[in-house]
Image 1: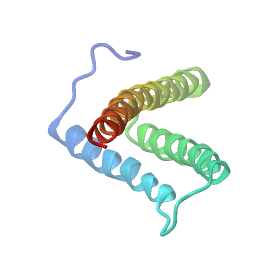
Image 2: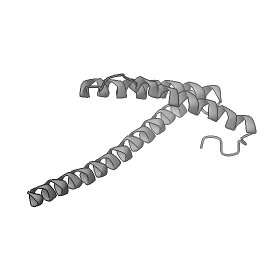
Image 3: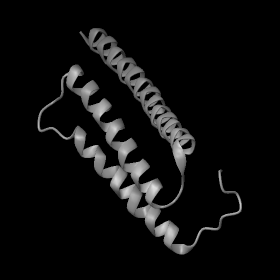
Image 4: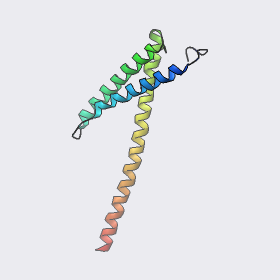
Length: 116
């Protein structure tokens, strides 16, 4: 976006693979042998986005993808927007699944009452 005439070599894609793996490793924040409380989940989400921002900004800076505060700020906002969009889409999918499951539960309850 900031350097429209810049070309990407093969090493660029290898680095993107490495950076993607580093970004995925931040998901370990959510690991827990027991179920998380709502407060723990929210805290871990905040920690996750902060870690993700740090990892991705560091990687992007090392790759020379941005220089200066303005470009860094734009990248922070892009990362945040993508993160929120992914969370929103996941929430919508979970909501649809919950509605389907609730409908099936209600149908089973009706069927059991009809059998009695």
